[in-house]
Image (cartoon, rainbow, N blue to C red; front, side, top):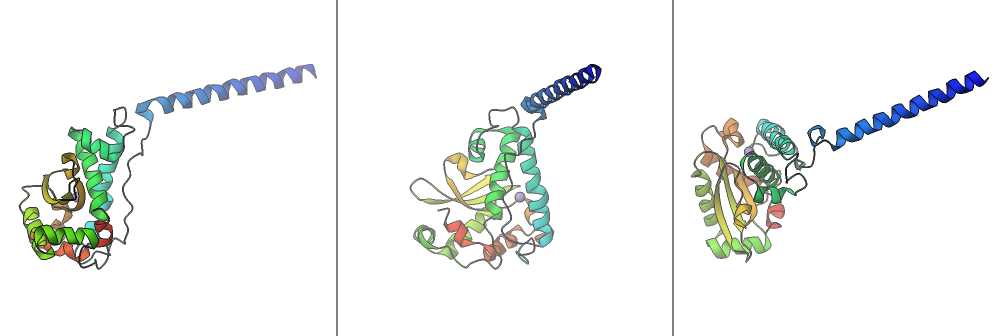
Length: 229
Ligand code: MN
């Protein structure tokens, strides 16, 4: 009886030591930035089906652009910030304060989150409320604004974006940006951005970027975009 008791006690002791050792090992792993999987930055949920923007943007382009390109920017950013001062920053702060690879990926995460939420099936015809008034006041008419915006987008050299942005007083401007650029780095608020990287239109329009830009107006969700003004 005494022997059985002592075997049981030894067993409990061994189990206790083993479980403590294991939990220490897990804690050490979690505290080591190299082992941590950071899922801080996320891709915005697509607010429509992948075929909802056809024929302006094909299902295949949405699947590749949102599903592969945008996902890669998010995954890259989450890996790159581990162990840097940006690990606990919000996305806008990272875009404003970083450079190099972190800026490129953070900029593209912000840009594509804005881009993919600017559309809806069938679109809505014109900007609403204060944004519509500001566009008319500054550009003369919505049509004149569209012409200027399209011309700016068509003339971005290489990959980049064209943005409608506002400053602190509500004054609008059209901003051409290269690569991952966003007007937020100039202290402006982005309202609407058209992606002029070839990956956004080449499957559907090949080299006809200007035609693609003209078509995009048919799928703008002006409720969402006007609320950014
Ligand atoms: Mn893109």
